[in-house]
Image (cartoon, rainbow, N blue to C red):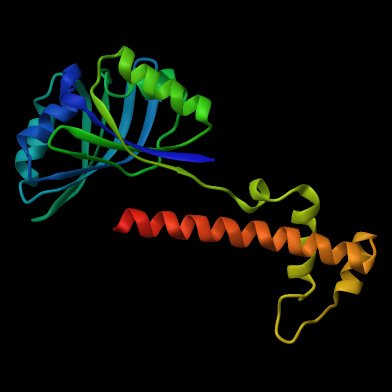
Length: 217
């Protein structure tokens, strides 16, 4: 499943939360959870800042905030929850029916949003951003696979049985012939099945490792 990281300018749509973050440019806003609703959103927010009291007062005096509760505040961070009826920066997410991976980071008016969805859903999200006139840039796009997506059903069945029966343990607790009996196929067929499954896993691991190394450089 593809995973995308998008950086977008929340202040471009008069996003009040982005505006507040630009007033605290050295602070890191971490949106820990968001429940989107047709009439707004319910948000749990952690902000790394030594100006916690000032930040809370800013929220309490913001017309778009219907209610705010402070869970914790100290000399380096504040944790709060709030309800809001204005969510322009969230509208593309809601309209495209995507769910972001938390935490969503907000710094100096810019959101860093990470999504994992089908190519079609991700395309809908960027289309909604463009339609809303929100400037954005794609930071990264990675095609990742779960084991069940990477392998065929038969290959996945072999890997599952091999692990459960101790084929990959040292010393091995079962043989290819025994796995063939479990799967109902000849030893030569289970050997081919093994090599195809392991080849897919190793090639995918190598491709992802190379991608990570390229990004780090």
